[in-house]
Image 1 (tube, rainbow, N blue to C red):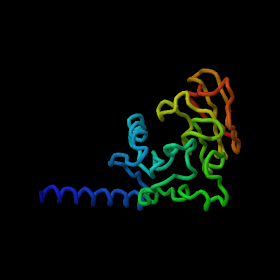
Image 2: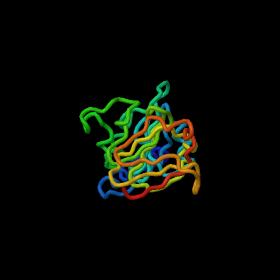
Image 3: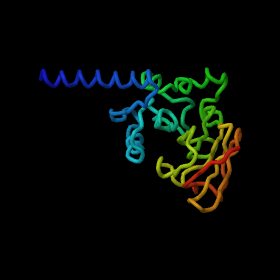
Image 4: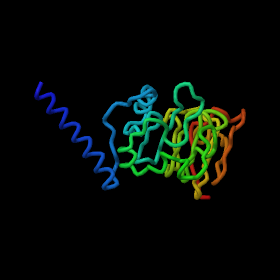
Length: 208
C-alpha cells in the first residue's frame, strides 16, 4: 500500500514538472492522462487517429503545441463553443501559451458565442462539420496541407473560415482530384454548397 502511494505521488510530481517545463521552455506538453469529461469518447477516438494530443478543456484538445485545436460541441448542442469551452485545464493552456484562445470575448471584444464565423481565432483557418459554422470546429494555424481523415472529419466539412492573412487554402475531394473551394484570407463560407458538401478529403495551401 505504501509503495502504491509513493508511486502515485511520484507520477503526480512528474506530470507537474512536465507541464511546467513545457511552459518555461516553450516545448511540447505531452498528454499521458486519458481524456475525461462528457466528450471523453470523442477525444479518445481522436487520439487513436492522431496520437500526441492534450486535453485543454471538456470541449477541446490540442496537437503540436496548439498549432491544431479541435473543439467539439457539448452534448445536446449543435455548435462548438467559442474559445475552448467548459472545464478549462488552465495549467495545460498556460503551458502551451494559448490562453488568449480561452476567452475570445475578452480578446476580440465581441465574439458571438457559437454558430458564427468569429469563433475561428485570428491566425487560424477553420473547418466546421455543419453549415452555418455549427458542428465540431477543426482549427489549424501553420499546417499547409493535410488529410481530413487524419483528424476525423473526412468527407465531413460544410462551412469554413480563413483568418490566416498570408495563405490561401484549397479543398479537394482527394489528392489530385476536383478542387471544391478556395479559402482566401479574411473570408468565410457558411455553406459550401450541395456539390461540395461533405466531400473534402484533402487540402493544401498557396501564398496569398
